[in-house]
Image (cartoon, rainbow, N blue to C red):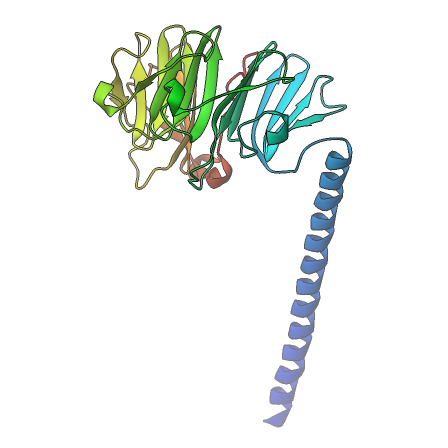
Length: 280
């Protein structure tokens, strides 16, 4: 009876050795991957890119804008970078989103952790050389701005206290709230095409087809506990990203289908922002 017992102990020992080796190999692989990432980040910073904390990326021709802990700008497709921070005129180093069209740059100051000094919206009309900063004193809904989008001189700012709209390039603002028909005052993302505005709030999608005068409310996802992050539209197609994956409508938001993990979508919790100008 002792022999099988000893054999079992020996087999267990071998199994433990194999498990330990596999764990060690896995740890070594993870360390190698982490070291590679660190080297890549150090390389990026040495090339002039700002601190590697990316909230948003916008591309306009050869110009690349990266928002995070400051704003990094490349005018040569990423070969070289300049960094813009508060000492250069930005309202804050906490940047949640960026949008640019030619020399006009709009920088939204906000984040997932509310702070009293987010800064509002920074605007440059000369490619980032100088900045003006807009706050609730100018009519902006809140100092916390989660997203920004522009069509010509019309600018949309998704704030923690409504959707702010400017028709003069950001000089003056009006603010749309639940009083005007929005689903919620916390607006997380905004996109527009023509006179149609898509404002993604904490409680779903609000759509205006007349420049913000009136709104209809849509619920892109009917599963438990959706957390919405971003919205984009092309023609009658609307895409909404959240912790569930992507909700897709091909009829302007009247009906929806979902791409989730079960349908082959990647980890949806990592899906934070759908950059607006994918069609450029």
